[in-house]
Length: 332
Ligand code: ADE
Ligand code: ZN
Image 1 (cartoon, rainbow, N blue to C red):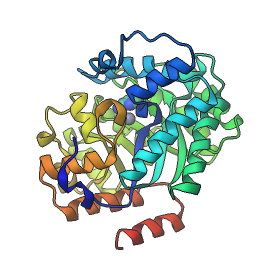
Image 2: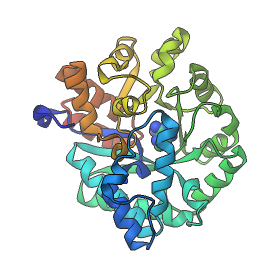
Image 3: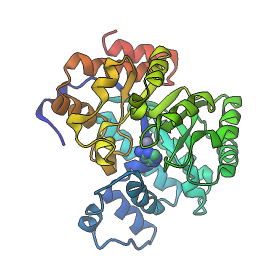
Image 4: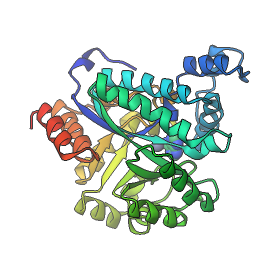
């Protein structure tokens, strides 16, 4: 939803939790299907749109994986990524770290170089034309066998496309982070940053494990940390960034209503919180819409929103020079 006062939202911001395949808008899904001569299981756009009511993470993931099968060529990945970048730029994003799910494409026979190269082509164009800096974080799909994680990383590294980090995503409950240690150790040895989804639907124990076994620098979501006082103390002490996605949490029923979102309580607890969109094409909100929702539904004042924008830049893996530039633009 857009609100009249949104023009004054903080700018610039960094987006640190964004699945590039989650930016595939319904119109783009139909365009890609047409150009790849694919038949979709939807009568038309309106029919597809009726499917965007989710009951939990898995109900969303089922549609997310089905729709990404329309991505077939390197140019398809570039087109999807460029459309996201133009929209994100309009919302004030000047640095973005995009998650890519290579296994979701290679298991369909798409070359990893086409996936990552296609995304990177658009990121390069955005650096040149939009002043948006960026990087790719390849994510391990945790619902697939853990033995596939290291081959995924090796393939991504061998593609020659520069990687910023490794992440962990997909169905959370029943798939604890510790199983993926080997790939995360290898990523660290290759100089990559490490992040993981934890504490979205899964218990606080998964957050501990992501920190202590995988050695992650940031936790994606992490909202369930509030159930464990010792964990909150640890996260606050170490100022571990949490990439929170308010609209996603409402749409996937992690919280009932935006007005009930725990983000203000997380800030009160001294946590290093950032605001992100997750899968904006599915949840109806890009990062600026998420900031607007905090203002309108949680009554967060402008200085609190600006503090969140500052956190996003500080918690990013941008270069020190780029961070200084973006912080200066935010008035620091
Ligand atoms: N993949 C895309 N969006 C995700 C989410 N919110 N949680 C876990 N995996 C995802
Ligand atoms: Zn996510």
